[in-house]
Length: 123
Image (cartoon, rainbow, N blue to C red; front, top):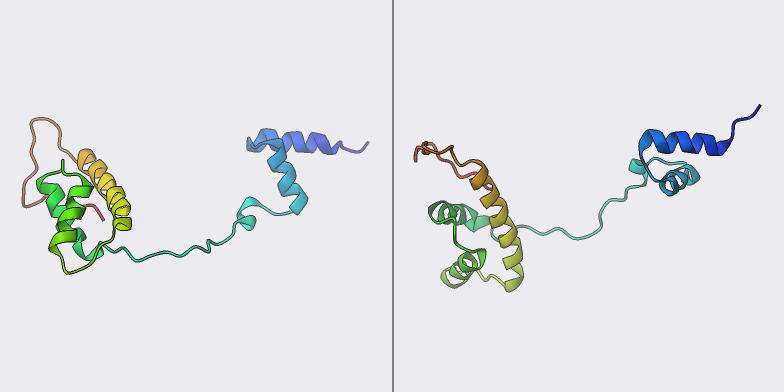
């Protein structure tokens, strides 16, 4: 008595919790998902605000309510370096990420950070 191939497919689907079409695709090409991944071909850039990030962190530690655009405009007008408007969005992402950690690291009520021990943590 031969086994039904659909029975094996059903077992795989139930065991892996993956859609039937996806399982069929991997069986057809006889490769695992990791073997099908391609390396990215897009260009990666050096962080343009890397040299000023320490100072940006200090500004956020002093006043965490500042918007990234305000900080960006400050650095755009006060630095020798030329920042373009395309660099605002990466700064907004980094500031958002930094705020999440600032909120997460906030001490419980009634306790305060010791200024000497507080470190800059967003990188």
